[in-house]
Image 1 (cartoon, helix red, strand yellow):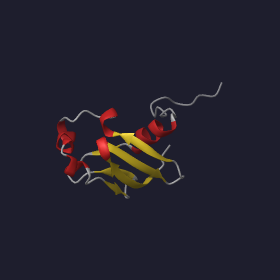
Image 2 (tube, one colour; image 1 turned 135 degrees about the vertical axis):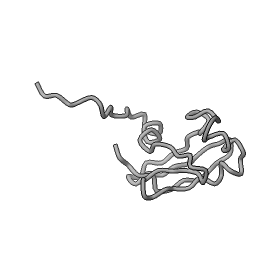
Image 3 (cartoon, rainbow, N blue to C red; image 1 turned 180 degrees about the vertical axis):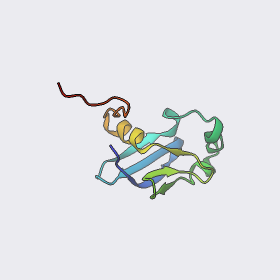
Image 4 (cartoon, rainbow, N blue to C red; image 1 turned 45 degrees about the vertical axis):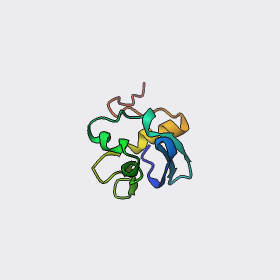
Length: 93
């Protein structure tokens, strides 16, 4: 897929409103994606959660503590697209 996120706005209840470079946008809930454990545990604090920002070098979003999310997963969640498996080769018969 490789579509970059170009904007993010934190919302109430751990929502993230995302806009991708191709114009797709929508809101997802972080609570539907990850448990608040490990690197995501500090994001349980709403003030830390709201520190989310776009990381333009890699086309995704992340937080100052190093937590980030895969843009392909986020795009697939918003569009109901499947995520291509990089380990399955395309075969012509």
